[in-house]
Image (cartoon, rainbow, N blue to C red; front, side, top):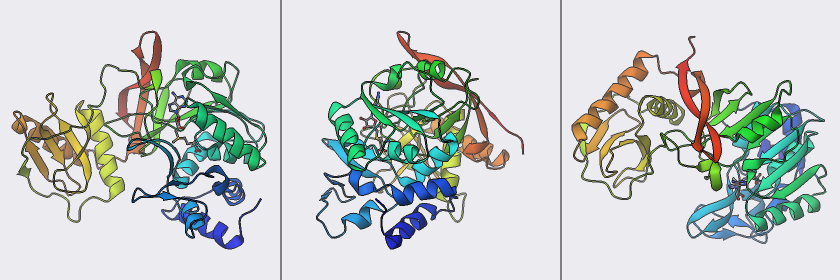
Length: 365
Ligand SMILES: C[S@@+](CC[C@H](N)C(=O)[O-])C[C@H]1O[C@@H](n2cnc3c(N)ncnc32)[C@H](O)[C@@H]1O
């Protein structure tokens, strides 16, 4: 099934909007795999209502460069089809070629697995939710996609067979050592995963020598089970209520940092400060970088214009830390998150360890 030329071109344009370059093979996969088949029960619109296949704007929304939330638990999304441009960046980082076997953690709708299959890979896709795995299997069959096996279970263990690539499409605190064992010494073996850092999930490209670099920023939902086990230095959970905040330092960036540059500063803050996380800025519809104090009721915000707001018992100390982070990032010539080189080490639950980012260095030039 091929979607019409108009919508297909429009979809590719939307995916490429931010300057992203798609390989011809991946562009063909996005053009040919019918995304609507993977969301037969609809998805949640941005305003909270549900878009259904009979709605006049359904296909327009399906072929937008946006995440489609397909299952919620209360107000929390628990399954979705990820944003296509993010999927594209992750698939390109994975270096998929015909004949390779790819392990996917987080089958979700099955759409990403279908794209991988369209690129010629054999896919084993695992989802921890049985109904989600069943629906993905059904959608893949309806779309006529071959070469994908959907497995219900916690992805931590992996399939127990050799694979050439691993792609994780759910936010994790660290990666399973089982996946690396299953990659073994495959030439070019790569694992691509969104790994928690400062309250967000930057996507890492990890090689079997436990070295990693950042592919892109992302905001994935969080995995169940040992993949998000408690570990030594978790980013603090965002606060529920904050004490009164007062301005400590004025604007330093005029115009304010662009979203990508702000993410770069945020990434650096997570390397340099163990209390870096995200929080909603009171009275503004905005999540921002925050250094959260130990009581989780105060600390310091760093806003995109470089101003610092702080509150709580240790406001002075946290505001000084925030200012120092901005100074340090400027002294380092505003390194992008992709400039960091990361080394992973074991941590997490001793009975089900995970490999976590443990040290960072900046590449020069
Ligand atoms: C963002 S969705 C995946 C998107 C999917 N790749 C697609 O193309 O539609 C994340 C999925 O990860 C699954 N998940 C969460 N924790 C998991 C775990 N420990 N093992 C396997 N799957 C998990 C969720 O059930 C959810 O369906």
